[in-house]
Length: 190
Image (cartoon, one colour):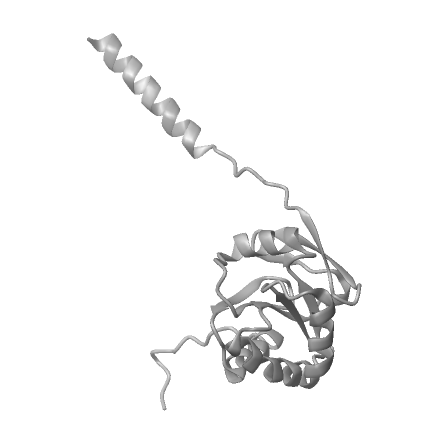
């Protein structure tokens, strides 16, 4: 009886010890490339908290939106993104991934007609990028679907549906100048 108790305690303690000494398995993140409709290629590398941005996007707030040319809320967002891209030139990068399978030639005409001043990609030409980013962000096909990354490539916000220009600008301002939360001092006098 004492022997069974001793063996049980030994097995239990070894399980507890083994669980306490587990190491986190590091999974290598892939490098994913995406090419715009005008031939610019961007290479991203995954990281736990977001993306390692290519050199030309490092230090910028990056907005990536899945959108479509036949989506009314997406179309209403275009002027906002044009304005924000102008206002925060050199500090913000907008990347728009068209996911309604508009042919590239038609999409290029659409971009020109609307005066879009940011990078536009097609889902058809960037399946791996869309699949990787969509899976990580929980995208299920709804558009518009916006991802906002801070200047370090960490994800700040994921929004489904049309998002106001004021909201996006607020997140941009925060990302460009993050301030630690103030803790109220209970002993402070007014």
